Image (tube, rainbow, N blue to C red):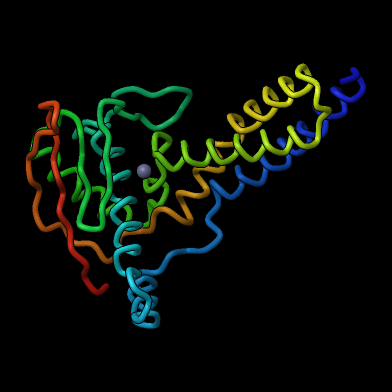
Length: 228
Ligand SMILES: [Zn+2]
């Protein structure tokens, strides 16, 4: 590939990155719509014939509650952040979760009273308008988005660029760089509008202490659906 071709490709990807980055950044920070408390319940009434719809709606709401609980537990009860980088909210990397349509698993060391408080506060803050708590940078959604972007960009550059090994290698480098650059913002957008929803229809049943197969501490927070 000539210098001119490489420079043109870089500029093309650079412009696309700027445009896409700007768009995803705006989408990830400014809600396009305001969720309403009855939206999922109404959708379920209108589309009650769709199999599995209730489970999907439950899973999205549980997923938001899981993220918000991790955010809340990353702060001690006195409200002071445990740690913070460049003004970002504190995130306790020792805590992780996995959502199901029955509730969510929370992995990591946490006292049961703190967990009860964390879940209650997370639910209250989410339904009071703090929808940003539903988005988490360590969510698996971001990894899925990064993988999909990398595959898409790699395929595109492979088809667009000359077939020589150097050009293809440079194309792969550009593809992975662009995907890594865009994935966090795009992942946040996908979380906000697709994989999570404000848990207006969730009520916590009980919290069960568990151990994972490796003997590490875990809890299952069981929830059920309520009409809002
Ligand atoms: Zn997640």
